[in-house]
Length: 332
Image 1 (cartoon, rainbow, N blue to C red):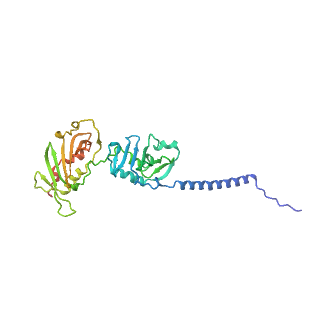
Image 2: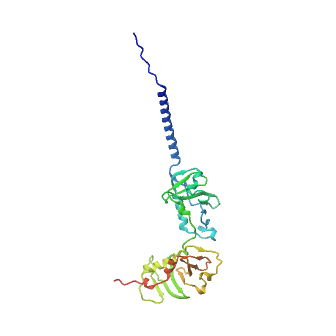
Image 3: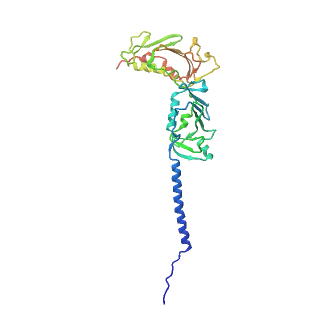
């Protein structure tokens, strides 16, 4: 008797499992390919490709909780256009462009408009920044959001781009300013001050002079010319004293005030605090007049400038000369 060999048959369940496995493998391959494609599309890099500040001549900065600022470059100098073209703080402008050129993103965190509010990137929360060239052409249109997870990074987006970028630097700290004016009241080179006279109650109290340098490239010695003194003065301290005056900074400016000068203690004949007359080596002269002290700052005018400055009281009080602090003390 011959026996027929029994043929093996695949059960339907095995076929189904094999099909599922093939589909799963195909799905994984497809998802990996898509993931790589997406990663390639959002590879971390420059936030603004080929950013250059050379063509930028105007900045329109509109923060949600501070006054809008319009900064313009006129004849090579940046000014605050909405404050009668008062000089802008050059260091702040430089910081803006340095930060923008170095702005890189580490990841794209969202492209869903419903999520913009989480990053303070809605019109009522974001700092809107527009940059223009000399022809008025808009070069960049940005929205700056809140600080990121580490505070030193931050969120931002481009107006024509739905993506929210996490930047490795916090641009909010750069653009969230309340005052863009130049902080140094009258930028002077301390070594160019030839003569400095301090007046109190209308009379000269001290006059310092810089003597001619003994050698080219050296600083001239600073001496007390009035009242006459035989004391030896510490030249490092004298240089610092001149530098404090040359680089005096203000907390803010007051323009187009409706108050009288007497309200600030700045009437020429009744200066409340003191007056400083500065003569430069080129013969030009400047005058600082300090009036009342309010809110930890003094009111101060310079030359014939109608603007009233607000230097901090601590910075101004450095000019209340105590000769004992400038004299070389004997070693013990």
